[in-house]
Image 1 (cartoon, one colour):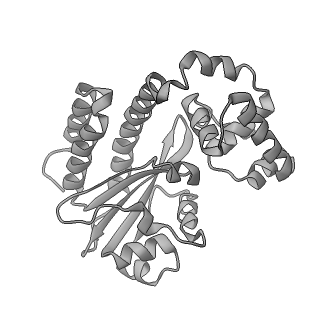
Image 2 (cartoon, one colour; image 1 turned 90 degrees about the vertical axis):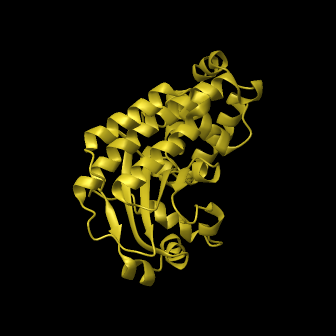
Length: 263
């Protein structure tokens, strides 16, 4: 770890993010990501949501330093959907989950196995939250070498920084999406559409934004998966959207995914 304090790291990150414009967010974030990797002597990091839909829609951030291979998402997709099991690793109570060289080598989990095949020798996953709800995770990895000095304190520090990134990223994406988005969606029309939704439709939209399947939504709401699918198509008609991915984007843009309440 670098000699400067964690407080200095956070202040440096905050300063970079505050002074940049929303249009510059990705470029500024790359500077922040490189700084964090150097501070903890890591090779690559990825920030990703726990929604398969959003993963397919390129809602990830990834950065690699030195001669580390950059993340190519298609390399980690499997034909049989085994890669989706990786998201289930986020269902943990501990602050992080760590994989050494041996566990990466012998795993039957597609994403971890591919990481090993590409030279990954150590990997950790740290869950992230947004407004009190699970959002996704930041994963970190070393290539060609292990990491026997990682601990809970470092994982918590990385989480703090990543959740700060998440706030800036979500806000920048929301603002630019409302201002641009091919002229199709504006804040005013979103508000007009939201008032047309019933409580049940709003609930289903929230669950979908969390990446739940029709069966999982149905189990939580005590209705059948077929009924959930019917509501999904009605939602598309009411909102003038053409796909489930657009429904999820609408939900997140209007804060439904972040304020999910399953009670």
